[in-house]
Each structure stands twice: as C-alpha cells, then as structure tokens.
Image (cartoon, rainbow, N blue to C red; front, side, top):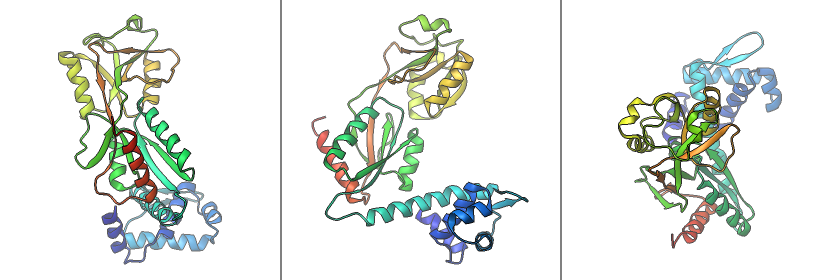
Length: 307
C-alpha cells in the first residue's frame, strides 16, 4: 500500500494529499458534482478544478461526464479502490495516534469467515470490552482470500481463517470449535430425506460450492474422491447467503459448513465420513499494532494458553 501511494505521489508531482482523495471518493459516491460539493462544503468550481487537476496529474481520465451525472471510468474504478484503502489507512493511523494514554481506547478490525467459531470471537470481544469498554471493534465478513488480502494491506488487524490455510507469515491461535461440513439442500430435493450424505450421492444434483483452487476446496475434492469430477457445479460462492438464494431457486445443494442460521425450505445434512476442519485467529508476525490491538492479542493468548 505504501508503495502504491508513493507511485501516486510521484505521478502527481508530490501534490496529492488525503483531502483530494476524499474529494474524489465523494464525487464517485454521489455521481453528481453539485451534490458532492454541498456535502464537502466547497464550491462547485473548486471541486471541478480539483478533479481535473487530479486527472492531469495521474495522466488518466477518472470520470465520464454527462449533462446531469458523472460516472467512473475503468481507470476511475481501480483508482477508487486504491484511494479508499489509503483513506482508510490514514483514518486508522490518525485514530491510533489519538488514543488516550491513560484509558485504553481505539478500533480493532477483525475479518471473519462464515463459521461457527465466530461465536468464540464474539465471546472474546464481549469479555474484552467488559474490561476495556472504550475499545471498539469493526467486523468484516469474507473468505480466507479476502481477509488475508486486507490483513496484508493493513486495513484488518486480525482474521478468522478456515484451515487448511498458509499461516507462515502469521502468529495465530487455533479455535476450539470444529467446523462440520455438509450440504444445505432444498426440501424438495429427494436427498433432503437423508440423515447423512455419502461421497457420490450429490452426483445428479446441482451443486454450489466454495471458490475453486483453494486449499479448503481441495479438502472437499479429496472427500468426494473420484465422484468430484462427476458432480454438476452450477456456481461458486464466497459468502453463503447468496448461494442459498440460488440453491432455493434451482432446488439444489450448497456445500458449506454447518451454521446456526435457519434458512426457509433448506436442510443441513452432514457428510459421512465426517469432514471436520478447524480455524485459526491470525495476525501478522512482527507487525506494529496499536496499544488496543496489542492488548487484545495478549488477552487472546491468555484465554487460549491451555488450548
């Protein structure tokens, strides 16, 4: 992230600052110069001039303008993502530096996959805030790849990751909860009457599974054995909610971990042989964290020292 920001400053002749990025992000959100200038409390000509200078400095066209609206170009879409990351990091750094030295406060950002072990995270947060009530938590939902990317960028402090996962660059503690794999299946599917699902029984059913070419997907393929090639995969997902909607429409099955959520017209059936995976709460090794985050990490280690 620092490298990317340095490149942008170089392109901009060293003139770009966070204020201009916030101007850009506001216009991108509102898609209207007049409305954005009102929200930013600056004049419309000033805002238009700043945007034009930004485009000139970067050497790309960020916006497509029409009579009543302004839209991001492809370059603008990419720049928005990077600009938002930089602004988020700047806000986070500012908040950390403003922390009261006598009263522990600040924000801790945690990424969580959709797993039952997230309940352990919830308990850790509750117990920690009972001791340090001025510490706030930001929760982000995603899969392993999303969470690790944000941890590398510095926008997440910790991540709950489903194993198997490469944690060479991380410190971590292993959660106590076992994640049980199976299928969420539509009640109209004949397989819904079963109590367990054996390898091969999903052949002929429209299956929605997690993204391919991930360590977890390889575990699922190993469980399925030779039947994996015969299964009809109609979609892949990274978060379960939308996958369930598709499965309801197609009256198919979603390969997933067991959650405590209830979904109308859907039934969870575990795999047999049983497939259970573990998860880890990880943070970057040898990373400089805020006082609040370091205190939370020490708190976690103490809670799990006899794990």
